[in-house]
Amino acid sequence: MLQSSFSSVETRKSWEVAGIVLVIVAWIAASGQVQLAAQLPYVNLGAGGVIMAGAGDVIYLISARHLLARRIAGVAGRLRPPGEGLHGNREAGR
Image (cartoon, rainbow, N blue to C red; front, top):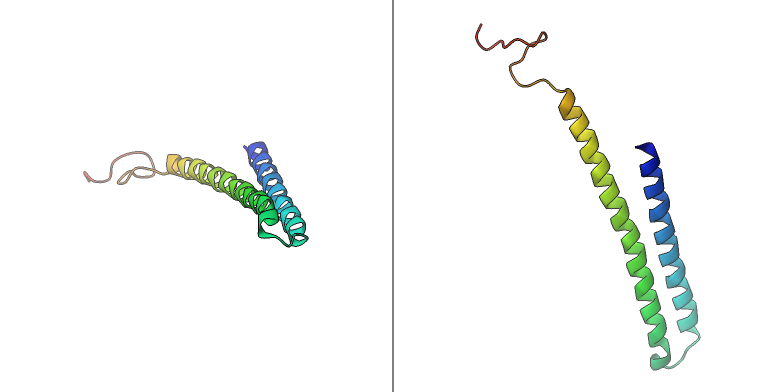
């Protein structure tokens, strides 16, 4: 279980770093262009970088939600049903 959460963090970071690098490259490349038509391909590259970084965040949110669901299920499995005493007998009839 711990290994899967680490790989998820590494995957998320790699997607976010790649997205940020694409945005920076697009920014630098577009800043050297004067014509709007020459800047448009770099705008597309930057938008792809934003989408890539967003995908890293989605991966993180999904893995965090699954981890939380597993923890809640573990806690819920250890709880006693309502009305059940310490020794497993029902206290409602007494």
